[in-house]
Image (cartoon, rainbow, N blue to C red; front, side, top):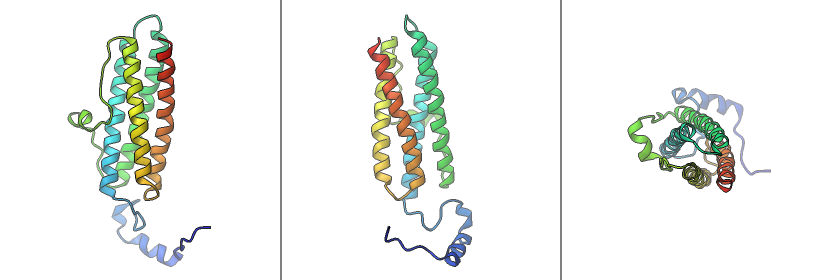
Length: 176
C-alpha cells in the first residue's frame, strides 16, 4: 500500500470544474508541461524523419534480397507513422501544438536522415536510427518518471516497437 492520501469526491468534483478549458490537464498534473511538449515534438520529428527514410528505402530497395527488406521498410514506415500520430495526439491533449513544419523536422529529430545507396547501407542507417530512438525514448521515460504516466506509457509502447525494429534491421543486416 502507498502512503498517498486519496482526495474526497466533493473536492474532486470542485477541482474538475476549475480550469475546464485545460481539458485533460488537471491540478494533479505534476510534470513540466512545456518540457514534455518539447520532448513530444522532438520525438514527433524523429518519427516523421524515420517514416520518410523508410519510405525512400522501400522504393529504392534493389538486389537479390530487396523484396524481404522492402517489406520490412514498408511495415516500419507504417508503424512509425502510427507513433507520430500518437505523439501528436498527446501534444494536443497537453494543450500544445504538434510541429509538422518540414523545415523543423530534421533540426528537431533525434535521428538523422541518411539515404544510403546500397541495400546494406539503407539497412545500416535504419538500424542506427532505431538505436538512437531506443536510447532517446528510454531516457525520456526515465526523465518523465511518475510525473506524467500517460505520456510515459505512450513512450514505453513506442520504445517496445522501436526495439523490435532494431532487431529486424539487425537480422536483415546479418543476411546481407
